Length: 489
Image 1: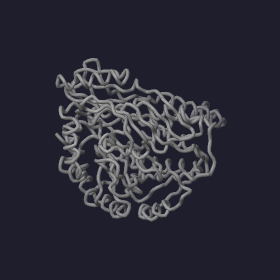
Image 2: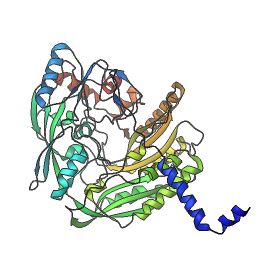
Image 3: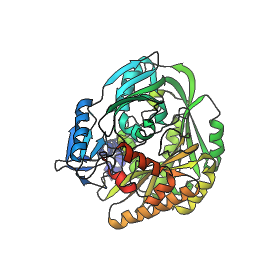
């Protein structure tokens, strides 16, 4: 009793104990790294680890002529070749049974920066972070990249990625010129007006039409933005975004939808980047920070139920704290990613992305509320996050996901890896895909292929032309991966 009274008279001491406890807890939160790639037994997998496959060997890309020799030899001997960067795709796009993997990460040179023309020429194995570090001192920035800068140039272009910018369209639209290796072993340099239309199949071609060697990208100014945040109801977002797209001062935008039980698919917060008219060449590129705290918050949200409600409220408060802050364009394109690493035994976290026409968004969300459970606390299949991004109509690539101006819903999902759990996830995601198709939408192909071949063909009506072009341009079917085998073989 004496000890208790003494402590109670010294609240500062209790505060120190609480701070020490919190500090120790945060310090001991592990920052896992998911293990994927090729192991010593030549068993390859990608980010999900769900579809491992035995390969023949890995060839490190030393230079274009070494790669050319690998492809020429493959044509002679009947080998199959796949292309790998950082392997963040999730559907077996970077390897094939008994095939050769060409590892492009070592081809990462920044070849030329043209400040006057606002272009950069870079090898395909470089990451977007590499490019940002090279161009930022010139006051230049990328036109389009994914939300994070950790991916390789070639990998992102192979999936025709998109990001937060609402002015420049998809990534393929920012490419001025590429040098690539064709399936028959010929090195070509082509521009957008190429009469053979290689652009249509190399970009968004998932590594099936050759190897991108280097790329000349269009750049823009590293503008300074003011962050503007707002909380809105989901049924207001369609008109909100339509109005926003008419505002020339807003350069970038994204939103998140609540997946918390109390506000499930009813609430959203939006983040806009308003141009200040200033450019920047001195602000350093931001590094990842607060990883352990972010991971702690995400792990709480992963539990579902009232903890998911708490996580959503915390997210909203954090976003509100960003209001009116200044940020450079390059730093706005460098979202943190380490805190999202997830390595729980028996579970996997995957991404899916569904595209729906902008004008169908409200009806789509209403139908989605009927399909999904608002509280997944005691369920194996859990939805942790839905981010919404604008995707302008794409007329460049063959397998185009945005057939008209659309909204992409990027969904972070967790489920078990037992047969029954995989089957349940597959069934629900196929229903989600059917719902998306009902609203004239589609789904994104870089992720694990829960969808059926019929759903793929409905989503991508150009699939047959894509398949025919593949046969003609790659007569020996040298470039192969598990994605092609699942949907097109």
